[in-house]
Length: 54
Image (cartoon, rainbow, N blue to C red; front, top):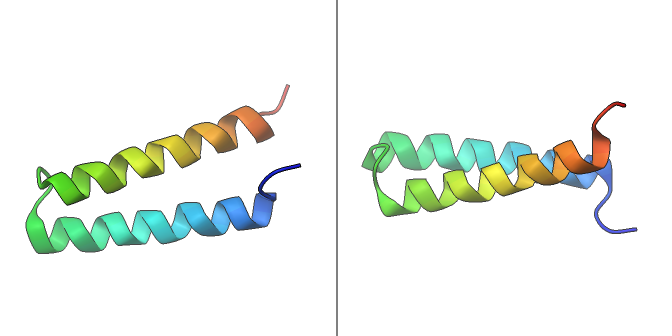
């Protein structure tokens, strides 16, 4: 049934750390940082849709 919760959380954390690293190197408005931020947003949306509590 798609990506498991542990794999998803791991990917979210790796993407978050990558975004922080890129932001320190290039600044917040750099296209690579923005792209990474958008990827993180998408992953968080997947998490919210799959694991939200009712």
